[in-house]
Length: 173
Image (cartoon, helix red, strand yellow):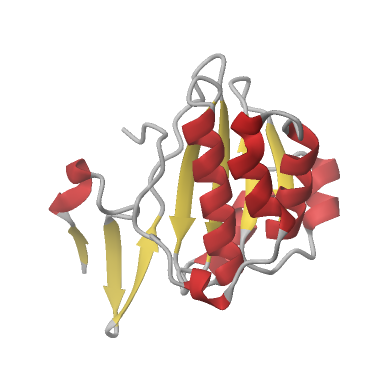
């Protein structure tokens, strides 16, 4: 029985269409519209409770807050819906070379970057996202320190409980 949750406009729910079967619900991700010119979209998907996923979300959020003119975010978190269905659907959108590289990725999170020309660059898990950020941001710029500090240490178990309902900064309709 599909139904629509009306809190969509308040930015409180990342996934608004639910399909209920036998008492279990799996959320459906919000649409990913074309990326605006001049920006990159940091996409993070994974389990709704995971310290690695929580940290990846925090890194993406910090990058977008630090550089809002260059980055936006899109999130999908659902412990039941992430694997295998959603993860496989995202991997199927990748170029063939990346499909091969990430065919065995089954862990949470999965991070990728979308660009205005519909190009997708798969990053992988939280550890690879940290590697990407450490290479992409300036170690000597104090503005980048909040991003880099999140990448230099392992997430704590307490980070398993994070905001898994806010959809990110990207437009979804």
